Length: 311
Ligand SMILES: [Fe+2]
Ligand SMILES: [Fe+2]
Image (cartoon, rainbow, N blue to C red; front, side, top):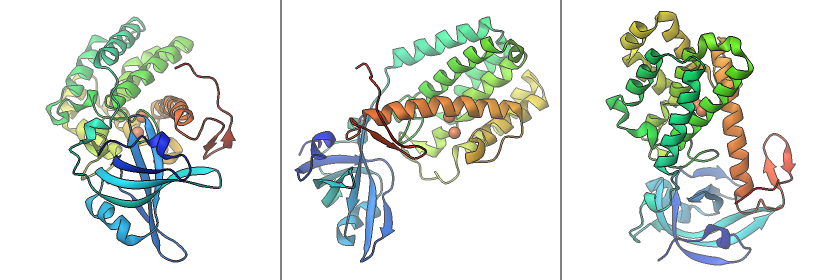
């Protein structure tokens, strides 16, 4: 049994048999006649929708949750949307593990980017105190060294090993540019930098190596605030209580109108930077997904024509 090539499998009426990886629980929906299940198969940066039309077939998937499965699928199409119809699916006996399906951003690249952006931020006025606080925060034993390996998401943007670290670094690069454009912000460089470093740090607890963790329902914003509370004394002695409270506001409100609305300018700025970074990365990944070569369907604006990308 080999890993199914998801792009080839999508070709209409093609039957493929092999192993696949499911990173998120499938959802059961009510149809006209009976319930059906929908979800996604993921392999490296390729994600493909699947549908399972009868309960007997989808039960093993619902019962066992995310993981590696052996399956038989048929390439299907409805209203221009391509997906796989699952004929059978069972927990895999192939010996493949999740790691065989996950994409990783090379460590050396992540570390080099991190060093570069901090040398820029230091030139713009980042303090040594803040740098020390950042290092002790990301090395906190409760994170189990996973700040640098966890994904930024399970799908959409930076759903790769190292994705959270990558997403955070890209946001810091945008921050450096924004401070250059608006020099008055340099008075708050420590707060904005630290806020970006910790804004999604709770994803280490929301996810478990790019699948949902057992306690995913307490979101990364809640878990980030919890981590911050454990560091409260160190943060207040490095800065002061208003700094600590402002960081709480950044973590709690960085989803803007998609969560608790920002109460501080710092939370609003981090939200804008987060949105820009994640949306641009997400739309590029979407364009690279199979079936989107001619046009891609977005939630906000309908169909978009792809643009030229280098390999
Ligand atoms: Fe977030
Ligand atoms: Fe984020």
